[in-house]
Image 1 (tube, rainbow, N blue to C red):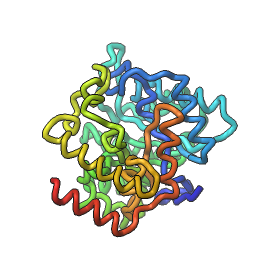
Image 2 (image 1 turned 45 degrees about the vertical axis):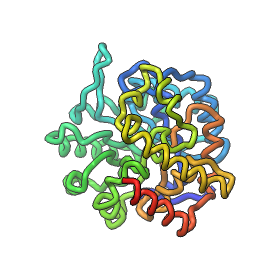
Image 3 (image 1 turned 135 degrees about the horizontal axis):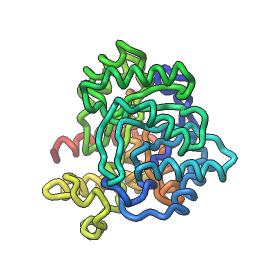
Image 4 (image 1 turned 90 degrees about the vertical axis):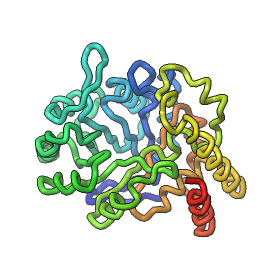
Length: 316
């Protein structure tokens, strides 16, 4: 499977990675609804068997549970993917989540234990919050890298100004921003800056949390369980929902020409941007993994990319 080097690192990663947000389960504030751990392990194994060579998770996903599920899957597999995780969101016994960049060292030790590894391949600050702790937090990240607890350090959801602030302390290997046809806010400044600075970009939510898979319907949205964060997400509400489902229908039309699903087209659209190294693709079962795998070889033509751009421009 084709790979690209991630920023200034020695990590050659496949064009998509396994996103482990949903496998954290439902028992926390930002869950995707009930999730069977056996399905999660099977999904991870299927991804690895098909050649995907990196997994992205975070300590906060399922309040540690996602990292535990990833560890369980790795113990049952002979394959050794790169492991990326994130820090900066902590919780208490009441499952209340807060942001802190003062506890990164302790978080790193906890993630190493849950993941069952000696070194984290890419360690990322999840959110630059509180902003006044950014320099202290990034200094700790650099210390962890020098100590060998993490191989490379990255940022997630940082602005250009915040990346510049961090880079005065230590180089940034990668940025993890949201990027999809529905959320293009990083196009104007952030992606050009990353490309100029050789900061790798692994974008999350390329299908915007399932909206652009072609499988989303109004009925399915209405039936989301209370534990699914998408029930209250803006883009799943009107007037946005109608427009977003129309985008998905266009992607389905384009996908039908190539015998791929709409989600593959949505991911390929993000990979078309030269600043993007790879995309994080969440999967909850082996079938979902298999459905998006064609994006590792599928690419949009310039005519199709323009066709999508024209549609987005006329449906703001």
